Image (cartoon, rainbow, N blue to C red; front, side):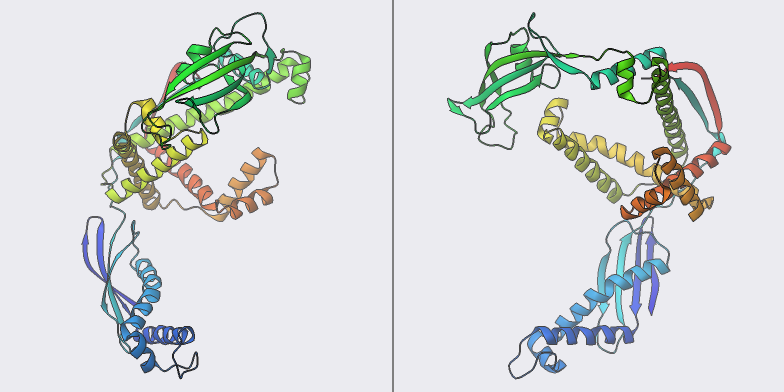
Length: 438
């Protein structure tokens, strides 16, 4: 039904001609005529009964030819790329050569494809494998973090406010004597520290309950709100209370709230076991990151600009979403890092190119070594995940299917296979030096 002829091929671009059988063209063209005859109103003719020549007279024959190509080309293009086994990385440029009744539809497609990857000699690679271990300090820090997460705020009356304290405040902002809409808050809890504007930290440190402070902040000219951009906001802040974190005491009562632990030593052992699993994952990720970096260095591949641009756009969108979750704008971020959008994108381009190159090399190895993933391996992986989550494997599988995440599982299995293959090819140098975890 579809004939494909490759016309030109250079590096990562391909031009090919596609021919669609005239019977398929006539079938689609007749359907277009039929559909349109039900949609238009022409005096003297019933809907669905309007002859072709009358429709051509009112709308023009090219209208129906254009409609036919719009419907035929996408499905036949997909059939063609499957037939010649290429992986396009962008939308094709289409040029219609011929479209006419009782004749084949002929069009050309020009598209960028995945670049060729030349693999290097892996047996020349050596990778250092460090063994980071959990120390007593790590364990104590983690237990303190757990205590802090369960800490309660206690009112402080015998001292002035210091960094880390929580202040209960009433506040209102004004510009040139007029109250800023939405700026008034009552009994709001704020914490003195890094996440507060420096002007607030400076004025509120050393204050006492009952104090009233006037804090001036100059708003950046880059903010989206034109009413406040470049202007000075004066905040009147009244300190209602000063509070500090009170950590729960590390005793038997505390560990009972944390789970089914008999003794404090049981609790500490469980915390240590969980930390060791995390550190084991860090060790694994660090090693694999070094391995893939060294493997990529000895392989040849030119990353197409379209892939780099797409990855940078994704990275910028992720950055913006992360900042929005923290109630910050890109302009705030650029100001904090003393940089601009152009420089950030330039840095992202370097990271994106490196990341894509690794993915291309990774895919090439799995292809050359025929590292396929079968259904049993997927089910075994889901079973392992279910055991870790202490859930029914069937429910976990159903969730993955519902969220269209089965491909992600297949990719993770394929990654493990590639890593295992590379481990047999390269030289692994185990580090004897113990490195403290962070």
